[in-house]
Image (tube, protein in one colour):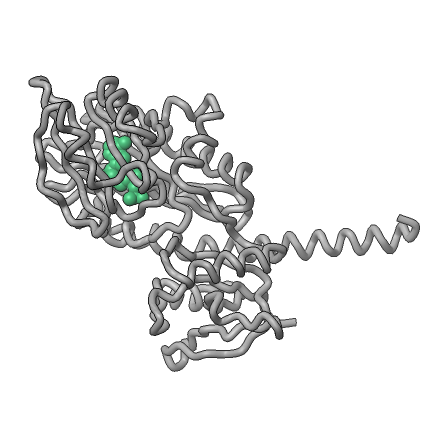
Length: 381
Ligand SMILES: Nc1ncnc2c1ncn2[C@@H]1O[C@H](COP(=O)(O)OP(=O)(O)O)[C@@H](O)[C@H]1O
Ligand SMILES: [Mg+2]
């Protein structure tokens, strides 16, 4: 019998067949070989539904190139598809439905609002969730900005810091609006009285674009740049959730988001937290608490939404060392660790899903064997 096969499910980025994350998949293919796992990459467009075959992308280490090969279905599927506004995303929904019975390393998470509501139900997470509500009318923003001096507005399906606004209430009764538009461009800051706040935001169509209004956490460093943390939680080769790593991110100057694609910079958690908290002992405690929380959140979301193999959490740590969950990312990039100079964490981040896949495959085999033995020893049942 051949090696177990893992199919990485992704989407073409355009109609010319460009694939996202090809270098990562290349690494995964190589690492898979060493571990005893065959890895190929495919998109829903490459599936022949009639013949149940896949026109897969295969990395050939000998020639260091990608080739195509017709393959049967893989033993397991690792879903790396990120939301796209295109016909390709519709094909993905169809594929997930049609082949939902196959073994997926990870099922889909929901939008920011649904995940928030699910987590709010758990008392143990409540203190870590910035208060959030759906923007239904200007009233929602008015009430939130009365309650909190800082509020973030973000689209429920947004990514990479796109379309995010930050509203800060000032002592003199004015409100500072900053943010990034849908193309992630920094907008010019505006200071307005409450009476014109909503007028200024009218063009953002906060209701029809389905925005969240969220309690803002004060995260400006002494140089005025915002910061937060990216924690990667993954299942290991024994099927157990573990924190692979956590890196700090410092937003670009004048940016209200820390995302790397928006010009953010990655640093080690130790350096950033030490600088923010000051006291090394406290910083160490906060780090530990954050890690425990990360594992709890991941395992809870898995119970809620179905099998998962990894999640990246955007965490904020305020001046008091309190941890806040800003966002849960089901399809995390791993580059933050390379950029923070954490090579070993980056390597582990790539290998863990493969180790987990192998573990899962073994579990399935064991279960099958057990049920065969049961059937043989107990022919009547
Ligand atoms: N409630 C908040 N308080 C302070 N900063 C926030 C808040 N929400 C988001 N941010 C900043 O904006 C960035 C992007 O927000 P996030 O919710 O992660 O959306 P996206 O999906 O676009 O990454 C965060 O990484 C953080 O820097
Ligand atoms: Mg984010």
